[in-house]
Length: 140
Image 1 (tube, rainbow, N blue to C red):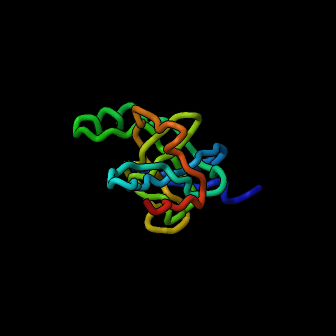
Image 2 (tube, one colour; image 1 turned 90 degrees about the vertical axis):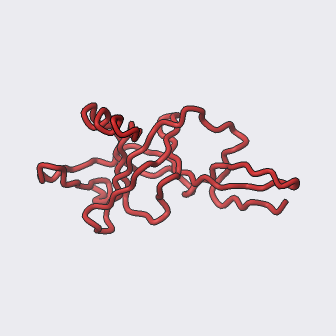
Image 3 (spheres, rainbow, N blue to C red; image 1 turned 135 degrees about the vertical axis):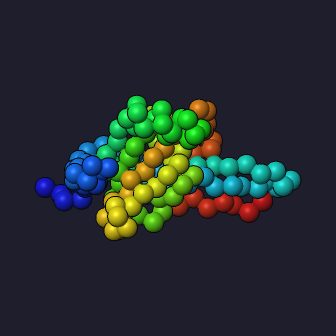
């Protein structure tokens, strides 16, 4: 079995927790564009050629309500294999739903896994704003 499909995370009680990366998600970078008259807009450019394996689940209700007290919105938790391209502000398309990354944790600073927390994107981007992997912003 592929060892990259499994990962662990030490939770607050210090018990090792294993995550089976059996779901696929597409990751996007939000890129600012400028048109010929200087108007700024943004597009979502795919970070990878294909969808990537991940573990995904909704954030626990107690964590959700604790964060909500401080106006921090996190609704989903993802575990990905480590990659430097995954950053705060990027977007995730998972099961036809869009999320914005709000927090990225490493596994005790080892380059094995990334634990990503995300919030819902209320208005998903339209088809014109989604660009394929390798897309370059053409000059205005």
